[in-house]
Image (cartoon, rainbow, N blue to C red):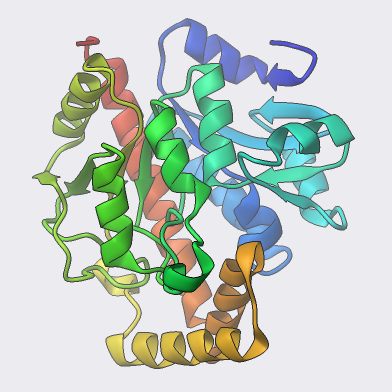
Length: 305
């Protein structure tokens, strides 16, 4: 612990004892879901992790301190604060130094989790290569973070609004394994199958843990655990395609660029699907938290390679 980093007692005790811990982000609280629903979802994810026997560590920035394991009151404060900054790897340090509240994206959460010694992180979907990359050169810092920090990220693939083939190509270039949990296919967030293959399928948390241990033992960094949305919560394909095409067209017409693209598209999808995207988003988030907890428990029981 330092003046700029605070680890909650329950999280610190679990880490010291070699017990399982799962990192959780806070962007979903402030930006990813409608106001109020984000807080409810964050608490649900903590319950899912705890039910597996792992300790949840929700990460965010408050009062000029990066907090690993936000309390109930701190989470509530973040959900109601105005103008909470969305912190990525590039603006994390400045955000902490400012003293203002900030929620952590995948990249920032990975950085802080690795700094604290947490090896597993559950999120919705990672960022990746944007569809207009040829003209915008827009590639998420999540991919760079995966190449730098030794954290296994359980996700429902990459966000649906991205260029998924190029995202997988970039992960391969960066040496980041994409392991499918009980699937041969890379998920497409709201849909179970993007039509793209994962690097390897593994069907148990123990098998995942062994693969992660070997990867880290060989000097590797991040690992993507591709965990498809449960079938009963998958968005119907016709609705998904129609809403996604309309959202992308709206973003192009509005000239949305940079960090504003993903929030804009997700909000459009929420409107176009009449809330069905939120229903699917909640389901995949909770599923990922549960699998991450199971992976963390298995990792704690798997010797380092």
